[in-house]
Image (cartoon, rainbow, N blue to C red; front, side, top):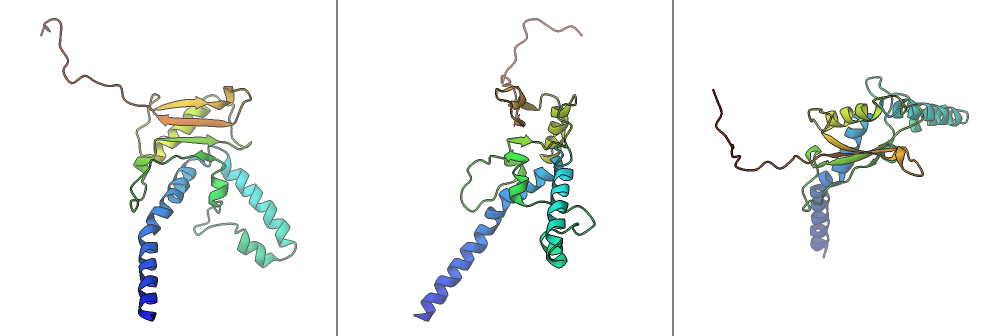
Length: 186
């Protein structure tokens, strides 16, 4: 009986280890896109101010607990990244296509994303959508061009929302054979 329990435990452990990359890949992609967009969307300053306020409030009771719960910096002196739930406030929608079970998702699977911004962003500045699009193209390792994305600006909706949606534009279909109507002169 104990042999059967050990076998079941080992099988569950193997399934857990095989599924680990698939479970972590959506969070890894979210963090990757967030790191490219955080400064443009005003998230870095807004989240740092929020973290500092909560740290001060908790430090009133216990300074060591405040340093543990809300660290001021990460390794290398950079501002600490927020949790995944806070990152999803800015990278609102990052849909991933369905994949067969054990295969994880990669950057090439991202075809669209929706972003919202904090009050710290310069959202009314000219070219704000282009700047966000450039950063998103950098995150996907794509060469930027103005017609790379189809942009939906939800600020124009009624009621207006603080959301920009970027979808990779489909390439125009090119016919397999092109026929010239007249002879070219050299």
